[in-house]
Image (cartoon, rainbow, N blue to C red):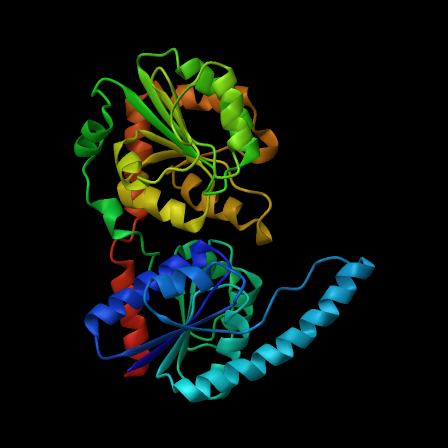
Length: 377
């Protein structure tokens, strides 16, 4: 069997695709697997590093503006789109896949459209509660549509009934118990642990709102706090260092029971150990929160396409599986009030975490693979 994956742009698209491809490789070691992406985004590094063959097409999205520069860019994008369709067709004909799978990103558009035209079985996976433009269009013509959350269904017009599969999470995330993780981090049973982050690069609004809370928690003996400032957060770390935080290693500061890092490289341990997560609402992060049954305060990024993080967050909020603060309402005071409210109620933390756990799909890789294999057979 031959499987062709098309995905790119962000880790939220790429990593789930790699997880499924890795599972297929384990189950069908003689199969052929090829990824199509772009040369200038994360897939060009992540896919080859995972050991998969990789080919590129040149594609980008349209700019939503009527400015002269945007119009000129969009004209160029039309040219790229036409060429990407031709290049996709060539790659597909050379590889001769049994099925073509799209995991989102602009690159999925031309690849899946050409596969449909060529009569090859096709399927797509939508990570978010509010689908992106590419998947909205593809849903009308591909053979199967897979969803992370059921809420996405009402925004699509698929030719066949969508299938709820969930989103794969990293296997290492499920290996440690809370007790084991807290012991590894040195967190006493009597204390609460807050874990906060704004993504790998960091989020300035979250960092700013968190600043006063970190200073206050550094004097607390009942709250432990691990915060990631992000790889763009060096100035933030320097500011905290000037305010009394001690540099314990490169990119890691500590004061009292508060630790601020440039990047959290043991997220599996920190997530397992914590009582409350504070962060953005990307699909992958939410799937991890659900898998571990964690209470969370979600601050969706308003800068993403279709405001999809807000819709992702609301899928949990309306099930009492998370709390929400929109960035426009985010202040140190609003964040501290909600954080204190949750940390003071074991019942609230338990119920929110339990409801999040009820939303988890722990066999997402297997479910997605079953759909793919069904199309092959």
